[in-house]
Image 1 (cartoon, rainbow, N blue to C red):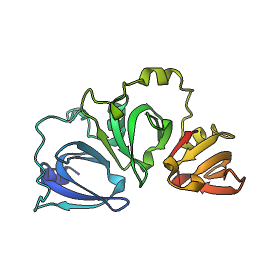
Image 2: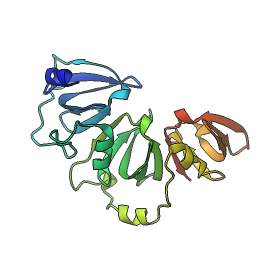
Image 3: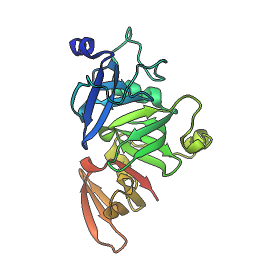
Length: 225
């Protein structure tokens, strides 16, 4: 990765991300499992696992320029290589935009980080649990800017948060017999009640008491109604 970093640093690239999304920007850093781009306005942190391919953008039709300030989230290279886990830790409590589902981004704050999922507070959806495997990119807000211009009530929300389970599957199991929304409500069948969680399978019931069985690996987010 060090050789690749030397080749790409400060180059403008075009990155194709899962879901056929394309992000263009200047390469600011390249870590073990994440790349940081500056798209002319924001620093974008993209996990390698969601990158299909990338190439140098010699035309730069969007006229992307180099940043004039340092990113709010970074890792001291003298201590360790940049990685997604460290980025998420540094982002905790800060205003961020997170792209997880295909239809829109989530705006809010990371409140806790567990083994393979995040607890995330959104002013729109309130407390959500997000699989880290499905985080496609993360964009920190500028300092002192809050999502939707709403004052940060994070401390109050944290006081009301119950003890979290270690894994995403365990946390979903903890929501058994409650009404929830899966994947931020991208489809009608994602609204209903969790009946049971058996290893990788979630037994899910809709308003008409029709049952659907979901593969846990394809659950990106979950939040209570």
